[in-house]
Image (tube, rainbow, N blue to C red; front, side, top):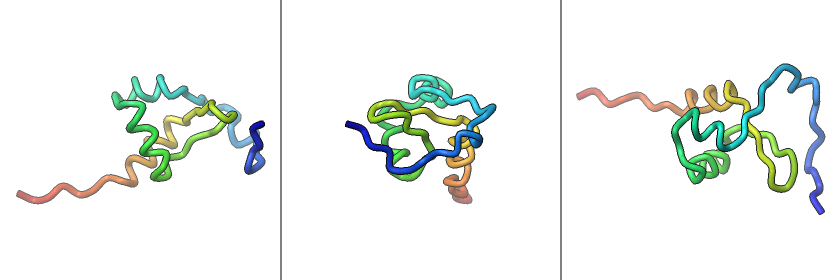
Length: 74
């Protein structure tokens, strides 16, 4: 049986649209494997159960933006 590891402040999610994995894959044009790898690297997500994950697109975009590297000067 699934046991949550932390309690969630439900007020923190009021007004936030949570997207499915498929929706995020379509929005960012990435694979399921990329999302899984990014989650392992610390990308924010919400676990709604043992097998259900949702994403806040603004949080994901912020996380990706913080991981940008400066392009090398040619």
